[in-house]
Length: 451
Image (cartoon, one colour):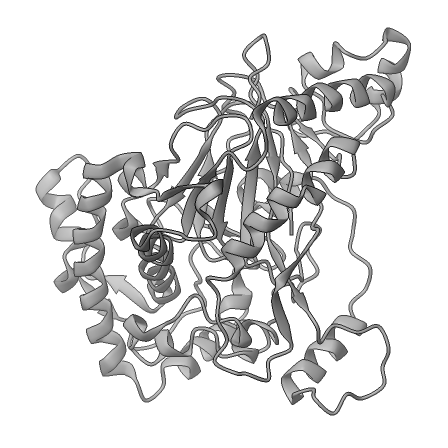
């Protein structure tokens, strides 16, 4: 992030994708393909072109659309997922709630210090504490990946690019619009923007700065290092963690104190697909959770992710790539409450929670304003496995991302478990696991996703 002279902070968003050797463009059968991969190719081949959209099309909470109730088949799906494992599911839920309460206490005490850090010069011989904490937390800061002056130049060059290309399709903040000649502003006013009253987001993906950052040898080395934390239980899996792929993401430059475009806590990579047999079920990614064994769920196993279809509903903002990590390359010095990232460092536990939440209901509702009432509401004894499953998947809606909030996911205690990353300087890199729950401060951001 590079702090603009007027207080604007900027980030290049960068996601790490592995090389999926199994991906192909022809329809000829491959002897090494599994039936799941063939079904995935067939589904993708039949998928129509995506509709054009903006950032608001990714989130129900930003779209202004009231989601319709899910069809009855989702109640039947939920019943199938846990059939024969009901007692184990109930017991695992109680263990999970106890673990969450303990871990959230640790996070509250440590704050940003819970996020592991490492210097770029250490990635070839990382400390064991960093290794263990990254595997547990699912997020890390790598310091000094890009030289500071070079990272600052990225932002300067992007501002120049915007001035020279006022026709770029985007959502323009007042400060960005100030860079553009008056004669071009009528053209810009006709471009889609979000939010309409105070545009903040640029649909800019291939500016020279973004391209240079994605191809920087230090950034690629950092992504290879992070991708090495993944492993495959299948030695025949057609995947490489040594070849990062470029994944283009948009540019955000948001104003200090802006709250009109603050993304809430969410998880990328689909929503209802995580429960569906034709989505994440194709690889059995969460099978351990459905069997009441969430402690045995391994979020770092890659081969089960290859057959996954994470965009069954072809949403405008949906991605079909397996992104091991998402990341931000900082172009400014930015700390908590200055437009930076917040993450939930409870990788496997928080994932298990929002997956199991739809199967349980409270016996009695929360007593607003009462600490004792809140404690009784969250107590495991107050929550029962629904004898007959309904269609609810809290925070999940077809073609949108998975969202989380305090009302739907009360045991995550998001106000305490979503923590800021430590202060970053130009050239620092922040990466978080594809299952991680994240959000951001209400300030200006420049996204650059490396893959």
